[in-house]
Image (cartoon, rainbow, N blue to C red; front, side, top):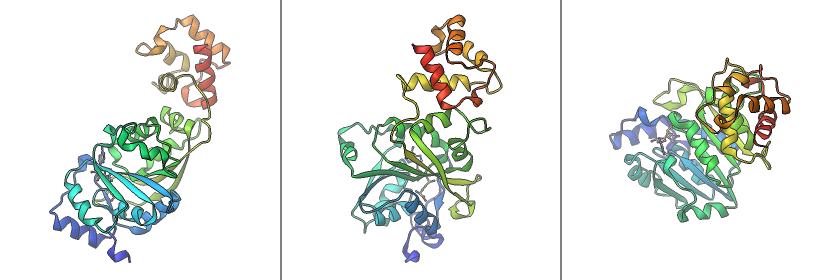
Length: 292
Ligand code: SAM
């Protein structure tokens, strides 16, 4: 069975030869040629016949094919025009796949075309991401309000570690806080470079982000909260106080130094601490002290 799958070195090489394809490094094109990894991704995302899957970057269809076999429906977004015709051929036997030629970052999920996704029995996102835009893609999906239950995504190992980082660790950042407020994050597996054509320079991991029933902290404006957290991490070696008082290009600039001090006192947070030592609950306490 594996011999027939796209995700094998021989089949991938033969498709590339047939269409005279060269990979575009600038679009993060590293294709998976190990079916076992794909099956593990299907398990990690808990895909079944009731699941609708959004895929980002199908390439020549290695992951798309395995998704089509196990799920109800796959909607895949590919930016590279060259792959659209190829996918038409490689996935011709699957009638539950829709390929959309579009930059994922430009997709407006609120538009009429995607309304059916809001009524899906179960919606997940599965992808071997183009690594150069991992964070913008995840933030775009989180901001889309799509009711996906889980994101199962292959990415650079270091980025996966930042998204699962603990308070106080070197990897803990504003990205960790933004992700973990809404999603429970767990590395499902790490991936060797050898399973890709061409081999990437970095190690990879599959990250599972599962939606929490409720966010860890409820804030009036998610955007302002994220700006506050980013400000407090702006210069990691600076204290909270120094980062706060030098915020001159966002909503925090309206506060006087006295008001900033008062908010720190009210939230019982020592201004001499650094951003990396604050839990998400402490960031929220400070935010609430500032806006009330
Ligand atoms: N899914 C295939 C696999 O696993 O073998 C290919 C994965 S490859 C790492 C990333 C894919 O994302 C490429 O096909 C690339 O053309 C596509 N891509 C890059 N930027 C994109 C964007 N902004 N929107 C949609 N697809 C994009």
